[in-house]
Structure formats: C-alpha cells, structure tokens
Amino acid sequence: MKVLVIGSGGREHALAWKLAQCDRVQRVFVAPGNGGTASDASLVTVALHTPEALADFAQAEKVALTVVGPEAPLAAGVVDLFRSRGLRIFGPTKAAAELESSKAYAKAFMQRHGIPTARSATFTDATAAHAYLDEQGAPIVVKADGLAAGKGVVVAMTLEEAHAAVSDMLPANTLGETGLEIRHNEGGARVVIEEFMQGEEASFIVLCDGANVVTLATSQDHKRIFEGDTGPNTGGMGAYSPAPVVTPNVHAKAMHEIIWPTIHGMAREGRPFTGFLYAGLMIDAQGQPRTVEFNCRLGDPEAQVILMRLKSDLFELLLHATDGTLDKVELQWDRRTALGVVMAAAGYPAAPRKGDAITALPAGHADLQVFHAGTTLQDGRLVTSGGRVLCVTALGESVKLAQQRALEGVRQVQFAGAQWRNDIGHRAIKH
Ligand code: AMP
Ligand code: GLY
Image 1 (cartoon, rainbow, N blue to C red):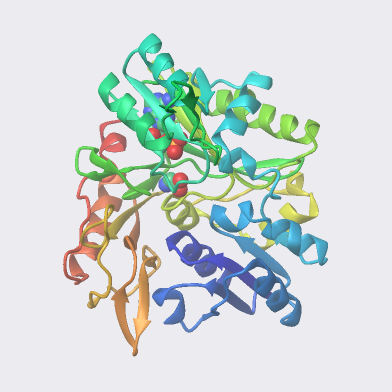
Image 2 (image 1 turned 180 degrees about the horizontal axis):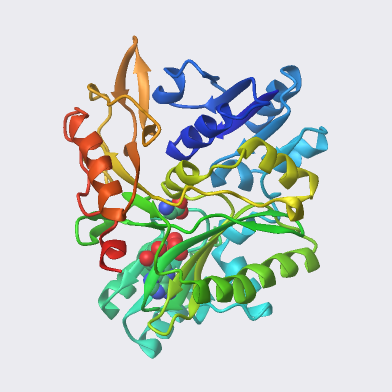
C-alpha cells in the first residue's frame, strides 16, 4: 500500500523512515520532503505544497493513508479536505487543531474543563495589558496568540522585558488631535499573559481516534540554543526518550487530569480530537503536572527519538487510529534510551544561513539514524536550506551511552558553521 507523509522536517523524515519499514507499505511519498528524503531510495519525494494539490495526488495515486507532520496544514484544514473527498488521513480537523493554533482558545478550553494550567488573561488592548502586568509583577510569561513556531513566547524575568514584549506584540493606542484614544489594533492581535510556572518540562504525546487513547513513550526536548539551557528559544536542539521526570505517578496524573479531560471535553464541544495530541507538561517539585501548551501533532525533535524506540508497526497503528479502534492496540518499545542531537545552521535561530555543503554523513544502522530537516539537494549535492539541518539520533543502554553514540555521529558530519549542543540529556543523566 501507498502512504503519504506531509511535511519537510526531521519529524517527517522519521515518520517516513518508520513507515517504510512496515510490512504492508510498498511506497512512502513525502511532500515536500527534504534532501534526506530525496536521497533515500526507499522514499519518494514529491514537490507538493497546497492541501488541494496533496488531495489530488492522494486520489490519483490511490494513497491508502496520509499522515500530517506539521501544524500549518492542519490549521489550514487539510484533514477536513481529505475527509470530504473520502481520503484516509490521520490528524485533527481544523476546529480541533485550534487547541494549538489559538492559545486563547486553548486557555479558555482548559478553564472550562478544569485542566491544570497557568493562570492567565487574554488582551487585545495594549493599555489594559500593560496595567495587568504591573498588577501581576514578574516573572511572567507573554504569548502572542496564533501559530508562531515557538517564537511567540517571552518568558520575562523582569517587568521591563514583559512590557517590551507586549509593546512588540500589540500595537499601542495613541491619542488623536482631539485627545481621544485611537485604537490601532484592528487586525485583532491578541496576547495571552500568564503566570510563570516553575518546574521541569516534559513532552507527553498520545494518539487519539476521537474516543480512545494510546500513549506514546515520554520524551523531553531542549528548547534553548546554548548549552546549560541558555540563550534564545528554538524549535528544539535535541531530545531524548524516555523522560525520567515522568514517573508512574506523574504519568497517571497527566492521563487523568489532562489527557482524558481534554479528549472528553473536545468530544463534548463537537470537535472530537483525532491525531497526535501533545501536552507540554510543567512538573513541579511535588510531581504535579500542569499544561504549558497543547500541540496537535508530534513534536520535533521528540518524534525522532520516540519513533527510534517504537517497535510496533506504525502503519497498522495509524490504521487503527483512523478506524476508531485504538482500544485494540498495545505498543511495544525498545527499553533503551533514544537521544537526538540537532545540528543547526550558522546564524540559527535569528537568521539561519543557507547553501553550506554537507559532507561525511555517517551511515545509518540499527542504533543510529541521521534524520534530515533543513537540507536540500542542489545539483546532486547536499546543502543546508533551513535552521535545523539534521538530527543525529542514537539508541543506547543509558542516556549517557545514547548521548555518546549520537555525538560520535555529529562529529563526523561536516558543514560550515554547524551549531549543536554537547549536553542534550543532562537532566536525565542527573536523575
Ligand atoms: P509554548 O510555545 O507555549 O510552549 O512556550 C514555549 C516555552 O516557553 C515553553 O516550552 C516553556 O519553556 C516556556 N513557557 C511557556 N509558558 C510558560 C509558563 N507559564 N511558565 C514558565 N515557562 C513557560
Ligand atoms: N519540540 C517542540 C515542538 O515540537 O513543539
């Protein structure tokens, strides 16, 4: 059977790599894919970009199943379109994807359903937002509403930073000649201001078919660019699975207090959730998880480490997920740790440089895979084409061994200006 993976990052390369190993899968298309999917003989990369073009392709090729990697096509309604044409696709509808695409919707949803999260307020008016900041004090978190690829969040340690973030995200009102206030926010920009939560973060990802849930292995990523978790936020500089901070007790709480109320709440609100549901957890010193955010997709680079450890057949799993029979599924996992180190381009995250030649990639084997993200083939040569370039992912008997194996792979790769962190997994090593 034929399968289509939508997206072009490391997560999608990992999905395609895993699907290509499934018994009943003959062909895996990746659209638009990257340099890694294009140079892999077991995958077919197709240059398709719009939901309509993807649906036409799936119909013409008789694709049995489509899986969506990133949030943007979900928020654009690709699942709704495929379903309206009778095409099998795994992912949330546009309405369900609002759990990620609108932070204001997600916060209000959590309040309605008693799901633990940071206290928050939403503003369209800059004056009111600034006043609220002064009332609350720092540290405090300012978030732009809408998809911002992880860059619309400012964790402000001082009120000064918080005010600057609000000024950045909300056009201020000014006084007109008559002394009356002129409101400039006609585009409807919104910010969510929320309580700063202390603790350790983990990625808790499940598959849902609208009613049943299967949990994936836990994971953690490192969002900051520099070692020691410092510097600006990125899409993720590395990840590992499992996450030791998610003890059996934390796991049970996350299911009962966050995941199930979300699945039931979405069904009751007429937006049954189908797809990967990713709850970003903040776990405090008492082991109480709260929701930092919802994503309606797999994480990147979490997917790379989770899929490295998945022993079950991903195609059969996704068929159950689209048939509404996830209650019949039990997943098998490699007991070892998987750890992925992202190699990013020079200038990432502010202004990643493109076009650097990439050479000396280590050959993949059972315990090491190089997943591509920002790479492309230029006249048969592999070059960088985006911020996160590669994710070198390894399995090992311990976090330390998986880290060593991944870093050995990283050190072989050559491209000018490569940035990576040598300390991915440091929290798990401490545990
Ligand atoms: P988000 O896009 O909502 O996941 O936010 C990006 C990152 O900002 C998260 O992964 C956290 O590290 C941090 N963050 C977001 N909200 C909070 C919060 N309320 N308290 C502390 N840190 C937060
Ligand atoms: N690694 C975080 C994310 O995918 O959102």
